[in-house]
Image 1 (cartoon, rainbow, N blue to C red):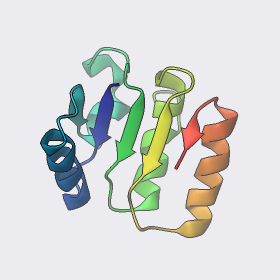
Image 2: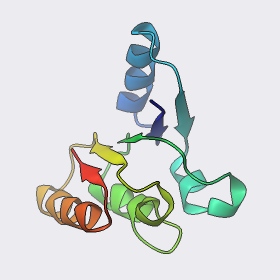
Image 3: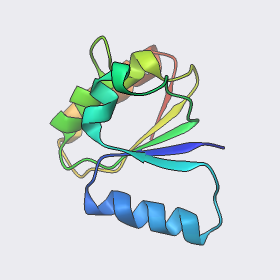
Image 4: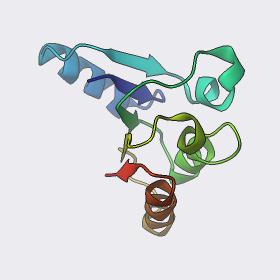
Length: 105
């Protein structure tokens, strides 16, 4: 299983450390700006995306749009929102994620 941690919030660093300690292979980290500029990296190929961003608005920015994760990630990917942001916006993003053919936690 390939896991991509997006963002540099402290929870992302802790998630990477915990995954490494557990022996999980295939973990990569990306800055939010790298996701938004799909020309700067190869197509997304992870199974799980951990959104380690500070706000729900940042999560929304990474997920949506022409170069957003919802369009670039393989069908059936799982998006896990680790931020403690706006519950209403998170619920909206959950619906958008499911409609795009992905899973949301």
